[in-house]
Length: 68
Image (cartoon, rainbow, N blue to C red; front, side, top):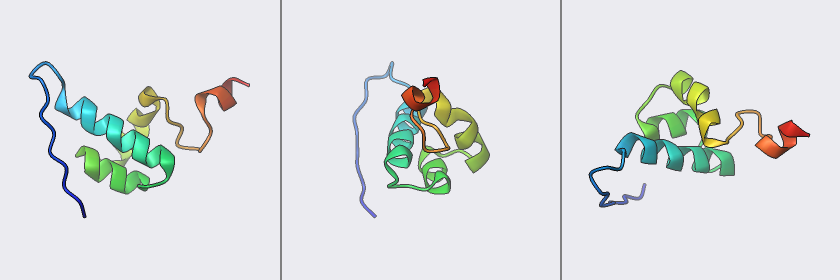
């Protein structure tokens, strides 16, 4: 496992950053939903309920695919 340290301005919400990164890694298939939830520090259920706010489908389709 790799470790990454980020310095963020105080006004940046750390949880939003964790969730955004987890969503991207989940979308790419790098992390499972459970792994992404662990990364974000939330439950798997909460991750699945929240990841759509980051433009990621839990079904593998993009927002554009669903609009079609």
